[in-house]
Structure formats: structure tokens, C-alpha cells
Amino acid sequence: MSKAYADYIEQRTKNKGFYSNAKWRKTRLKVLARDHFECVMCNAEGRLTINQKQSLEVDHIKELEIRPDLAYELSNLRTLCKFHHNKRHGRFEHNPNNRKNKFNDEQW
Image (tube, rainbow, N blue to C red; front, side, top):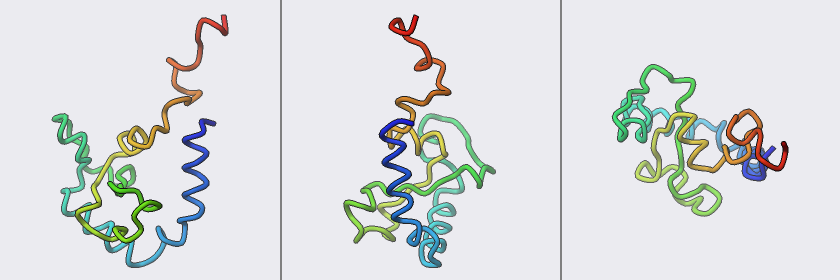
């Protein structure tokens, strides 16, 4: 498991109460609707990622841990697909399932 992913799991555990509260769920739905249930990064790249409600996530542009005062601020939130959300937080760096990282010259 990469350090970035381990840090993510630790932080996610700390924030579990936040992400399950009614105010967050309502805010999350507002952001998804505002962004037309599309990943804003995919949209900027000309790709369409609609009807994937399960894989769409709401991202805090300024991290929740750093700016908790912006937790519900719509201008600090955006819709991202799971891929772009993980990429934004560097969670792919040492993914053992990523073939590119699976083998290197030292392992041969």
C-alpha cells in the first residue's frame, strides 16, 4: 500500500462522521447537480462521464484538513470521477495493480 493511500485511509477514518452527516449529504447532492453529474476534469478533457453516480465523488479543492471552514462552501467543491479524484490525491503512485509499477529493472 502506498503512503499516499495509507494517509488517505487514516484521514478518511478521522472524517467518517463528517461524510455521513446530513448537511454533507445535502451539500454533496447540490454539487453533483450543479456539475450535471459529470466529472469536471473529464469534461475539460472532452470526455463524458455521466450516469456513473456511484463512481462520482465530491472533491474539496482546498483540503478539508487544511480549510475546515470551507467544508460546505460550494465554490470549494467539485465533482470528480473516482479516477481523477485518486489521481488528484496521488493515490496511484505505487499501486501494485498498475502494470507500469509492477516490474522494474531492479526486480529482474
